[in-house]
Length: 185
Ligand SMILES: [Zn+2]
Image (cartoon, rainbow, N blue to C red; front, side, top):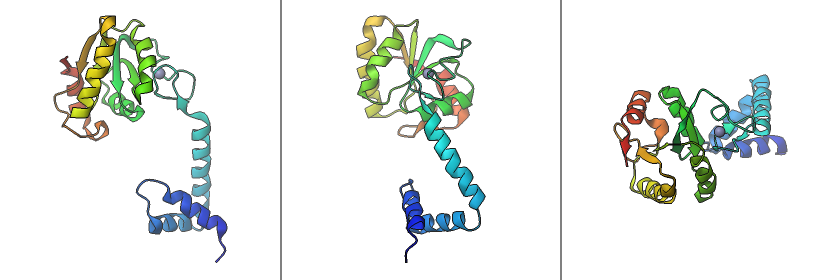
């Protein structure tokens, strides 16, 4: 059976998380038969998103400009810096509506230099919004030690966020409470 393009589409779909061979084939079949216009819309959306979405040069948040919407917003509290492990956690915290400060995405050890730069720019409190775990606590300690010379206050979310659970799976009310009831470290 030829169907080279159909096979390519199936394989591309299989590279998505949690999509196996059968589902990939079903989705691909639906795309090329029943939902051709939906499939083209999806393809266009993917192309546009990949071409236009990038990482904020300041904080690591998703952005469609050099600076993200949070960094560019003068109404944000520029004395507070919430450090997260992934840009997706920013969506979760923003949806809780409680936090009005700035963010920083600590994606890898290479994130330290830009974090250090941001921490020296009028920040007085650094809030670690990491899901509680031994590994994350060690990372908090590591970052805090290295930021010590800048005389900042450090806190971390605690209450209401269960150990080992990803932030995106924490309900909004718990997350808002965890931010409000953050503990000084
Ligand atoms: Zn930003």
